[in-house]
Length: 320
Image (cartoon, rainbow, N blue to C red; front, side, top):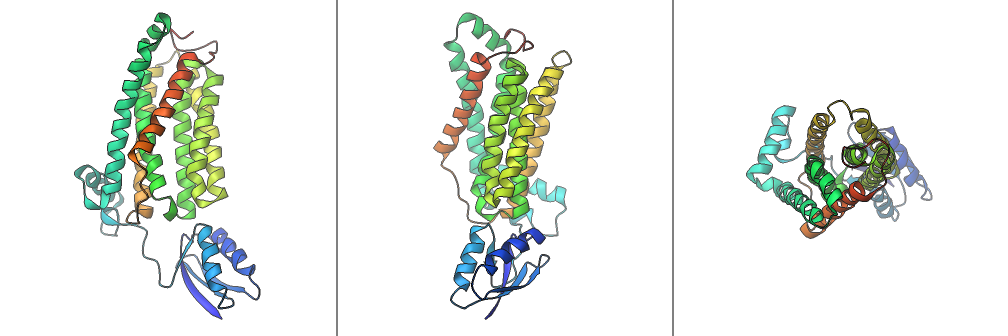
């Protein structure tokens, strides 16, 4: 019997091959047609097997529908009536004004701002229990602590935003999420730890965080997204530490501010892309406690590495 479905997340020939292999595993099944532009697929199989085909295709990150799938935009961020710049502005305005279509994003923003405050407080508490020499160095590096708080807050929003809608990403969207989060989180962590501990420890710390974040964020669309996240975290961690090392005698602090501002803009753009891809779908919001606890745990580990980790021959003044 012949069946026609419209696939959400079907974007390229690779997607067609994945779906074709799933269909061909069933006895007597035959994959007939695939149109990436319309998302239409046609296949033949036993009537008793069609439910299993739909289920297995869904497990690979696609969703099958009887009718053509509408555009992947929602709310203020959708529709041809808005240019990209206008749509992005309406998206940000919707979050800050508390629009009903942005309740998930609004909650994530509030938790991210709270994370920023808690990380600053964490640094103050840690400083109270440090030996005098270490406390002095930590005080000299308070700018790095402020940047750490900014980085945790910004990456937290983007990471948990991707977690909220991870079930609705297309193949390409999921890979972009994994690549961006892996690269940015690894680069920021590597740059900070590289400044206080040197190239080796900075690279290891940046790689570890970037690969974990990128791999987890990218696995929503399968092994391709997982690998994208791992590779991006690997490169970002090393490049972040290398950047700090190369700029020790050439306006390192000023560059870190520029770097974190640029990374923040990229994460905002990623958040808009996530909303444009999956906004309007049922949100799978993480609990505020889980989000804050995870953010504080990451910040605490980075602070402890910055203070007590091994140091290379060239590090931030006071940490040598």
